[in-house]
Length: 400
Ligand code: TRP
Ligand code: SF4
Image (cartoon, rainbow, N blue to C red):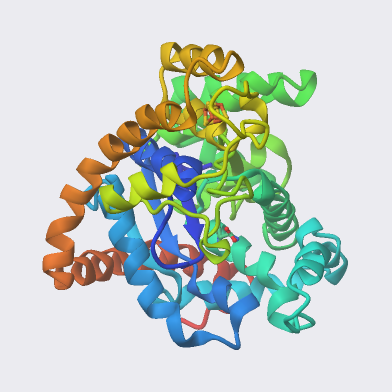
């Protein structure tokens, strides 16, 4: 926890649908108002499962980037980049791999899960087993402390915390740590030094978590500290090691489950998705032909919204008043399904209007997107390089 920094990534799957939008991207757009943010296309991650189909990776990345920009990710606020264009990710993946026990990786819940779910692929590969290490590198290389993810990724972030802890434990050791930490405290100036000492004692003796946070905050606000001292002061709060790689936290996005047109999870590969920038006529067609409660065979048959895939969409898109109207009308057969769907269609089209507008200039001039991402990669590289200098030194690899 050096400064508040948000990082998240997404596998490139081409054009994004409203499940991506409501599940993640809309939240990213909000986060960039408040924090320094980095968002990247996890193209190497895509290859951990789809190494036999590399044809679409690059095209999918560009499509995804356009949708991110269309959603309102602002390149002046957020750094947008491509994982494989920042080679340092590979270096840190390799180095973290040295100290990551295989057992940790085999125990990741998605490991066996995915192998079973994607049974048509051979996932008994080194790359697939190791992808949480790569995810660790993605996060730790930016010393990001906040990682917005969906529920399926929380266990990965937990694992990344363990990697950071283990890394700091092994490589944060240094002769004379305590003395060096005390010297660093003096450099805070007498007022801050006293405060730091009090907060540290409160945490160490009474386990006061708020005191720990306040002390971290105090360090975050202190600008003129050398990196080594910063690492010592963060580390000294909790133990006797430098904190070279801070532990990240998952920011769990409260995702409204976005069902597809058939009530299954929305996914392009199931052919049940509404794109983020869907043609309005297509939105209308897709929603109008969407399945409803099978009990409503005739217009006069009452239905139950809980059994209808249209209902969760109303919960995302419609006001309370409209939702009440749906429940009342559906359960009493007071409204027909097409009638029920109309406000939803209107709301989706309304929501997508500004996305279409923002996307237009990028569609007209693809070089714009290329430049934004090139700048993002450059900026990411600078940040990554800073961490890597430290990591190399800590691991005995400093040659100058
Ligand atoms: N594993 C994530 C997914 O499949 C994508 C991802 C890769 C990621 N690296 C990350 C997410 C780092 C957050 C932080 O969706
Ligand atoms: Fe679904 Fe609306 Fe039809 Fe009820 S009225 S079954 S909620 S579409």
